Length: 264
Image (cartoon, rainbow, N blue to C red; front, side, top):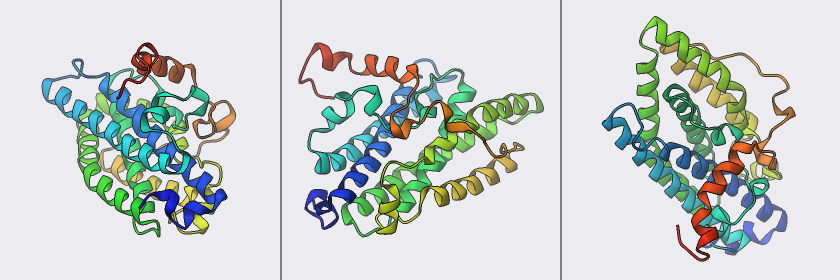
């Protein structure tokens, strides 16, 4: 069923809210997928090179599926939505647009994101909009490998007292922006009230804190405490991004700009 043909799609307020939510999910997957892809040829070993390249491809593929569903509501093709918008129109969390830095940061970001993504997919499974619920079930199965890979690497990086200290510093630096993975888009509360998304952003964040905290503790790491004043400068869900996203999008859209009509 096309989302625009569903009962929900006939309500303008819910239609706009759901389109915004789907764009946020798609943008998260697309931007992180491209960041992962930048490790191709540069990962610590050939197994990691192949594995993270595969993860990158899957994340971008998942973005395509969410863009297709958003296109049901907004019109336009996945190419238009992925590569035809300005940085201010993107709704990805700011953490995901940050340059890769070192391997420790990339793995920590992957670990934090994939746990958040699992919580958000759980919030769509069992919802009343069958195409979304079915899509979430499919992606949740495919994301299991990402969860395992990120956690295994996290434990590997934190295996010695010296490396544990370094990884803890990376976690501390990423923690504030990681909270932005659960910042709501406009109208998201309405999606929760109607059951389209079964858990609100605050509830999702609490679930994520519990899951992430337990894994970190078992690896000898410590989840940082509460974050104050985080959203003062940047909030990707409302289009307040860093210059990092602008630079990345210029690279990502270079083919489209030089060859209009090219397909991704």
